[in-house]
Length: 384
Ligand SMILES: *Cc1c(COP(=O)(O)O)cnc(C)c1O
Image 1: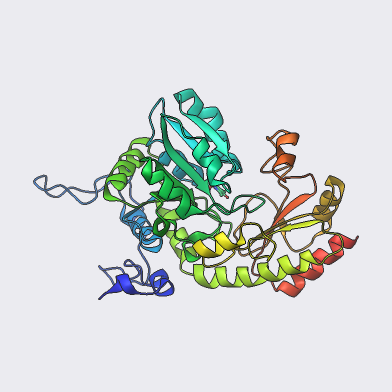
Image 2: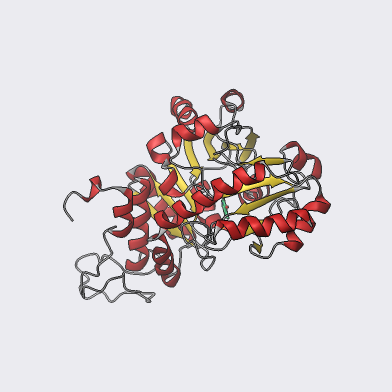
């Protein structure tokens, strides 16, 4: 492959190392649909002995995401939450975590209902303010969990500033990169130790696979994550590993098209009389725009906006004809979500409102449909 390390991202997406089967020359990784492997000689340890511990199809995916994120080792899990839970298993009873306050709902649930029972405590802070992160430090703090842009109001954390401070205090940093993907944001280059993904979203890209990925920045973290993945057994299956790679090959083409439309949508919504607020890191008035531009190569494809009331939001959801009205994001089809009744339903109303998640807020994940049709559809739904 020559000096493939120096190749550009788009080339790495297609030529990631396992794009040609070494045995047959086949143009995709074979599905090694096997749970175990014959050990012809007991004298030397086999490369693969049991699929929970390693499988060539899954390995190809794990090497693929490690290459894209610029890490040393990748891991494929059964879901985004399995990857995130696995990463938290690096901690021990008595440890303390600092976490961004508008973290993904599933991560919030893990931290507040499961890890608390393991005596791992979390302080949730507004990570747009580094002083608040610093103020949360305790003698037993071991890790920082970052999500930027956050969901659904797309708040921005200065990743390099947080990781620089974390290193001074020997804290492990983890970042959920689901919204940006390595095409738009590569956290390891900003000092993050572990990058996490719900590959169910943009990486898979077609709303047809549930998967999670983790990438370690160092060999020692990679070694420990391998132990956890094998020990918990929360691996991604062979078929889903293959399907995910199938989707990832078009990541650049999809992200570019998604983003072009998302920018148009954000501008259009900003001028719409029925919309009271628009959240998108690419808008000139977005409070985190400058920091986001320093650490990311694009704004992504998720645009949140406020319709003014719960009644209007529900009306919109019932009138739109193009998007899927659903939980999830990052797919070829547009997906319209209603945080107050979907992803953030478990959050008390006052807490939701404090965080800008009003009853009128909806989140649009812009798909690959023609933007003119998306706008026309939204216009008729907003005006009716
Ligand atoms: C969906 C999502 C997750 C959870 O991923 P699953 O694949 O559903 O388990 C985690 N983080 C973010 C930002 C997400 O959007």
